Length: 188
Figure (cartoon, one colour):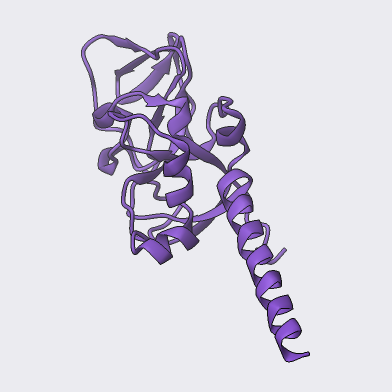
């Protein structure tokens, strides 16, 4: 009688762990903001919740979406990266403090022509209205850049203190881990 009860508990715990893994890998995952590159919108160490459906089904986020990206754009991603990136697996493997995931805002999509002049970002010749940035951007670049197919261009809201596409380059769509959603657990 006791053995059957123990086996039942083990089975239930196993199913719960598998369900949590599937949910976190393909549907929904919490992330923690690391640093001040998204000030004033998001603060350092703030927990955000990300829909992973864009990553699961490989579709583009919208302009202005806050996304979590894998900043290691010089390498391909595989299903193994998705599994080992899950917090539970990271905890078990001892890789929980992975600093390659960045939280940024989508500025450009495939085919967009971006220009940085007059302390502003221009997309396809039109200056962006960006009320969310922390301060006037102190950045200019010679010429224009065109976002390639299957890539996006991201920037932090704290433009003067952000490592983003200006440094790491265009982000392949499969490196977009998910799109931030409103906190479903926040007090209303």
